[in-house]
Image 1 (tube, rainbow, N blue to C red):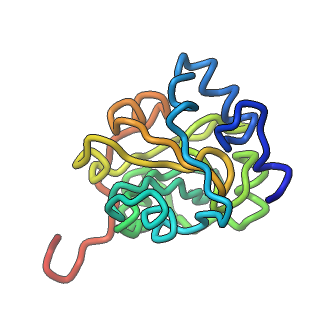
Image 2 (image 1 turned 135 degrees about the horizontal axis):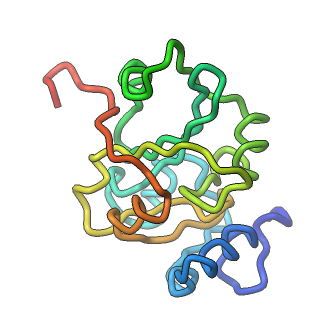
Length: 173
């Protein structure tokens, strides 16, 4: 396990994220976090490790919108429609941020980016699909730990705007 995955409280959460939870009054979340020695770098891996539906995993994805970072929170079973993000933001171009940009903006590596507690403040969009569940699971700052949170609480603490930006399937879902 990497040193970034080690922590003082035993939760598996990255120390910066654990501090963010404390500052938000969410210390109880650390007690419910789950640590996985094999890591959960993908939504599929996280859902299998937690034992939940794929759509209960909250992916934290960083995009560049006309060069400005934006975080999109998306359920694990869906893909982000970059055209819908572009329209929502009223920008000309949206694309995925590279690994270096993700780390610079959030302070975390891809596969472990939490929905809040980042190094810098960015605009956050949360897809409404997350609200379909009582609880969702998100990365706790490392690929080795996830934490549960109510979707409305997630949106509030991430200071996210609720949007519809998931890719639509051929059947319209």
